Amino acid sequence: MTTPGRRPENLLLGAGLTTAAFFCVALVGALAKVSGQYTSTGVLLLSQNFVGLLFVIPVAVRGGWSFVRTDRIGLHVLRSAAGTGCWYALFFAIGHIPLANATLLTYSAPLWMPLIAWAVSRQRVSALTWTGAGLGFLGVMLVLQPQAASFSMGELSALAGALFLAIAMMTVRWLGATEPMARVLFYYFLLSTLMAVPFAVADWRPLPAGVWIWLAALGFAQVFSQVLIVLAYRYAPAEKVGPCIYSVIVFTALIDWIVWHHPPALVTYAGMALVIGGGLIAVQARAAAPQIAPAPPAAGDGSVPAVPERDPLPQQ
Image 1: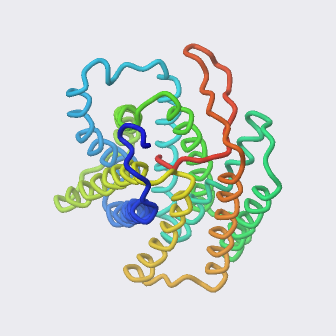
Image 2: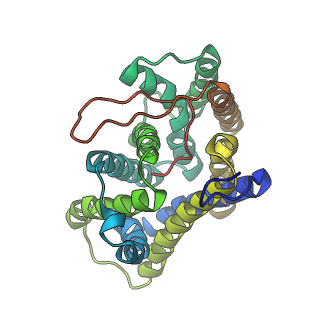
Image 3: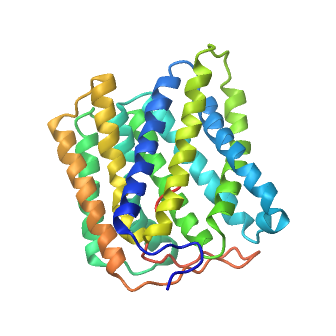
């Protein structure tokens, strides 16, 4: 028996949709790198979120008050702030270090989640999860170490993006306990658009006419990535298709190589292998752990919920 809105499980289709979603995420990074030559990080951020908002407004209008009503506005704000911080940090990093390195560092986010889960709720984390996270962090250090004696601003920004992404992923998990995904996306694009306005105004400079098409493509790629992830959930549970997140690292490395002629160094390949391998170990360890139902805080309650071991796909 399947739940309403959930089709019979089709793992192959779910994995294919998830991989396609993260190909779109890789395109977001590539389009940001192209557009960033002509405009500021704040404008990139606003363009991405505004296009998404245009897509979800008709859904909200059709659903009426029952669709937009929520008792979890605080979590929506936190999720939007974390997502906005993640994308701003990634876009900034893309302008200063190779696209593949920026993406690899940012999408090390799942490796941070056991540490954040332990720090927030003192929840017990399995030894296998820590092992996977440790291997992944070793891979991160391999990518960082050859660059310079100290971290560059681009590398620090990408690592900050990873922390923001980890927070966004956990917040989506808490929201998913009570909120339909369409409502989560509506509040994300609405609040993130509002949050991006000050950055765009502060960084504003005149845009060449041809840049608008790149900015629109950036927004469309982001929307398609979110739609494909939601569709993937209908065919396979997140813990089974979650490892597909790491396909974004492969896609961006290929794009960086083909478009910008930045072939990954041997040590970068090693770092990628460790990050992906460590992440897969951590994901499988969490999937094998007994499931704990998410317990988001009650309305008006500032307490921090326990973090269950199973992860959703990341939606910034």
